[in-house]
Image (cartoon, helix red, strand yellow):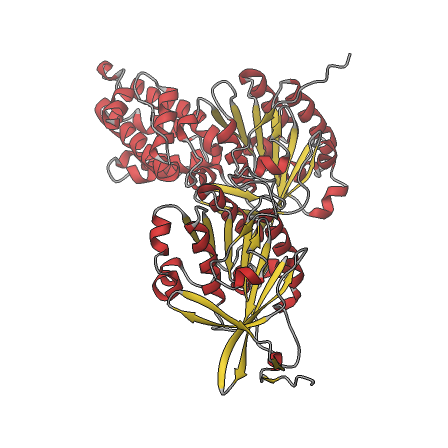
Length: 488
Length: 135
């Protein structure tokens, strides 16, 4: 008797949610969609219903008290998932507000049961269940525990997958019997931080399934909800598995030698330097060199939109043709309430679309500014996850970071994020023979030998040209180089 | 398309020339409609929209004023009582007007597609369903 019951999982129709749930909603489960107002509870319930309902798997949406059904239908129609052709064949509505107000919980339960027995819906939604909870507290009413138990048994017995929708506070989770009886609990919330608002979803519980823990960002658009899993599972890619013996050349003669032959596959490099030092020029050259050798690239821009970038950056000349031939995709991610998960999803999707092996993030400071304030607190952790998710797919990531020159200390990156990158190329200004010159050094290449030379470089119409090592100078990093005194 | 269908819905017994038959039929039609609409938008939503339809139809059919003035009573009974003292032709015209006003109001809230599907569900021989997606 080793044969285990197979649980069918229903797709939710909410992008990203099935992944978070561990495959979808278990059939015949009794679920709670909870959270505060404005979190998207009714919308996610409708989205699941319209995705899962069919003439063979009919749905019953019971409204009790709360948002008037007239308005609910009016607003829900604005979403792309709303399919009026499914009403009433696959989806039926039943309003029981009057039953609750005039006859109490017994009448509500009786109506739901008789409707279920008459029409055998496979999906049942009760919105808002909060009204039932309030009514159960009145004298002479059936207790909430009894109501939930009977409803759960009845609906499960009729092989219905059930969703109770209601506003709850987190502190209620300990004492409310619904939380005990429910097989699954989805918790939606929204947090306002300064001038931005972020919605999140958490699978508090989903019996028998391996869910992705934690809070996942939710966006609501004209298409409905979209969930950005906190830890996205690795996606298939055209890129080979990370083989760090494979080097990706930057296209900057001299720099590739300094790096030991180029940047390894599945490696991350930060180009840190002051304004105007040529960070974007170098990053663009890296992308251009990859495409020249048959690879594909993605540039994620956080400061300038692609049109402005292409029009104003001398190093970007010709890139629009590469975009046109789908060898390059340029993403502009500038809204100020981005989440890291959303950014990762955008970049990962672009990588998939073009089959990219090279990704440029320009710039990290722009990325941080584009995040909603609540995500900025976790910027380092978020960056670590994002870079890790790309490099483990064999993608080489180049990031630019603005770094104010300091002539009293050697700083490798802003905000102590240098440890997140496998390699660091540092660019600086220095005074040399009456001129302000640019110089670069490969400050770090984790696990690989690299040049320790400080080398001057120039930026011309063809990009960066690296010059000779400054072997005869000292004090270069203090900003004023002088000839070294060589002992006789 | 719908005005002709609505007239068809309310004129089944007009040949009898008896306004009482027309009025009783009109009340029954509205009562049946309310059962289906209430499922979708609730009893209160149904009654509110119906009361507004009666109020909006008074300009064209002053005989409906009595129905609109007493909202506490069953609105379909009130409609019946208003119509049964009119001529059969007027009764049909008023019933069609109220029905048209009501469905137009409902469309404004929940869209023409859902309303078409709802009417088709109740009277499939008279109203066509909306086969395309409602967005």
